[in-house]
Length: 341
Image (cartoon, rainbow, N blue to C red):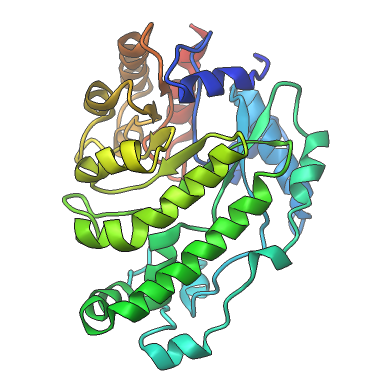
């Protein structure tokens, strides 16, 4: 097992060449964590034992960091959505909303991120192997949480009916996410942060570009600025169409890296050629491809991507999104096996 070296992750995010092939994954799944560590996670285990398993799994697979939340308890509390999501694999963007006008907005209770406990990030120092750091991701992102609170159809109507209310909702969500990250970046265990916020369908963003610029992008810029002011890189994980927003992601928001790529939108190979070295390209081996391809086909594509980026820097190998349970474990293992060749 190779030893973690977070400097390699930093080099990638600086658009430099790491000393060896570097891996990136937003998150995996507990059966895979158990396989990678050879340990079974007991039911009803405390959150630090669960985090310990995640850290050890990332280390065993060859990552230089592990993903976690700043605190597990902080969320925006979105109606029935959390209950629904725990029982089925997908939910409508109109399910579980709890704000649909100013009256329901006025009644809504907004959680204060400063009132939650982030000490897990301090305790994690005892769990991290030498040379390893944490990546802190958010409890959803700015646009994701607004859609969860308001419902997508309702949000589209409110943009016309009450744009002032829309602005207030985005400001409530954005300011609380900023507070969440402000707490997280203070900890020594945290190497970088991920602002995870899905922005679009396959062919367009959820909102018009003008509305994205007005309501969404300013809060992302504040999150990146906060992270940089505290000496921590900041990456964007965002699914869906992104071609028309990348200049803003790079030149206005100043994200260090972009994650989430799909072959049917723009394959990672093309994304790398289009935006390297302006921003680090993370992962990108399409999830649908990894599910359907043979292990040898996966290895071949990964080898070619490593060859393409060799000497140019700014790339981590990984999936286009994450490693859910429906990805065959052997296919995931085939992907990461090429780093040892």
